[in-house]
Amino acid sequence: MPWRLLRFALSNKHPEPRMFTRHDTLKPAYDVVIIGGGGHGLAAAYYLARDHGITNVCVLEKGYLGGGNTGRNTTIIRSNYLTPEGVKFYDESVRLWQDLSTDFDLNLFYSNRGHFTLAHTDAALRTSRWRAEVNKHFGIESEVVGPEAVKKAAPMIDLSCGGHAPILGALYHAPGAVARHDAVAWGYGRGADLRGVEIHQRTEVLGIDVVGGKVTGVRTNRGNIATGKVLCAVAGSTPRVLDMVGIRSPIYVHPLQAMVSEPVKPWLDPILVSGSLHVYISQSARGELVMGASLDPYEVQSTRSTFDFPEGLSAHMLDMFPFLSNVKVMRQWAGMADMTPDFAPIMGRTPVEGFYLDGGWGTWGFKATPVCGKTMSYTVANDRNHDLITGFTLDRFRNFELTGEKGAASVGH
Amino acid sequence: MTCPVNGPRAISEFAYGGEIRPMPDPTTCSDDAWADYVFNRNGSPGVKREWWCHTPSNTWFVAERDTARDVIVRTYLYAGDS
Image (cartoon, rainbow over all chains, first blue to last red; front, top):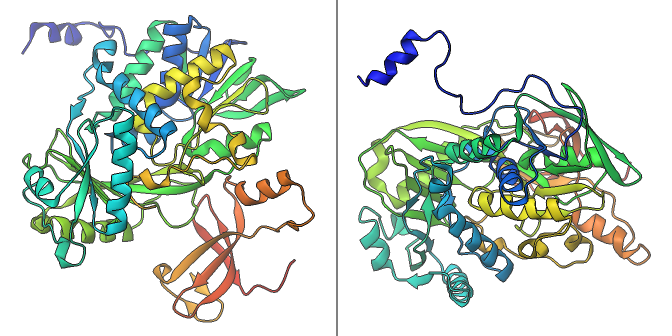
């Protein structure tokens, strides 16, 4: 036993600083209030404090840090998108990811695996080629490979997928990676906390005061706050917060479910996604198989799980990997995905002055955490949309100028 | 879910058709009103009137459903605009 552990046994008080400072009361006013203590909100707080010198900031979280979609996703990080706006944006995010562990002094278990999007039909192969060409144009490693490359990377795979969906090829994206998602929220949270940002957990926002089209304050279950700037980063609760400021949006909320198996020996290095079978799978550092599928087919604003989900997902998983038939499912859960009609996020300034939105992140938000923090902190600090997010503003719907990203959604939703 | 024609059936037999929303007249309404109809949704939780279809019998009907708790309140056949 290391001797320093004795201090914890002998001391009456906790002998080391806690991860986060505890604040018993809210201040009457802040320069910026961030609603949502997930990865996106905490990253924005961190970059506001570090890059823009704005530290009179509070982050309000209804539950606990990273308890929403930050802790419910399947941790995949990639940038092989379809539109130029998407590719540039996610590529910047992947670059930020790579040195975050050093930045935080906290191990995020960032693990570069390579990412295969399997194509079972000619149409899927055509989309793969299209994505590969767009990606290569922007200098991102992405190429179409044949079935033999898939077999080489994942030797256990049944290339015929049970005989009814043979793999014709795949889009291979070498920078595809996974990371430990809780640590991302903790790392950003601690970094922001050290720089003076206040993080208030179990604090629910009840209303937002808007006077003459301008934000003036936020009402919470622990008192009222005066502020001129509010950033909303609340994933599946976005429509509820938008109702508080009277903004209409195209966001609709469907649950997205996922599950993990019991831990098994490492056998799967890459991340595999199949659009036709609606599944994706990777193996975590602990050996668990992390598996997901497509959205639930109807609207629900809760994180309930259903039994037909593991049933359907397992059936498709066995098409790909028949040898998994004796592996047990250990947990399943759901997150609330705030979907948009064009599968791109909604970010930036809004018709209400001082109200900034980072939403519509549906099923693709985790990988974008660092770049969202960077671009939203810039947008909030300067009251001007960052160049990387101009394709994602809310007015694009009113102007019929959508950013069609549906082809790059990891599974056919 | 209870189909108004076929009675209680497994949820896998049903398809969701979205919330019932009145359509503005496309020839007379403004571009903004049309964009609002095409894209914007009521994404907040609550009891909503929705289109559902029992797919084996192709029966379209209305379901009132609490989207916060995923509970069906009642189902009935559509009886024109109300």
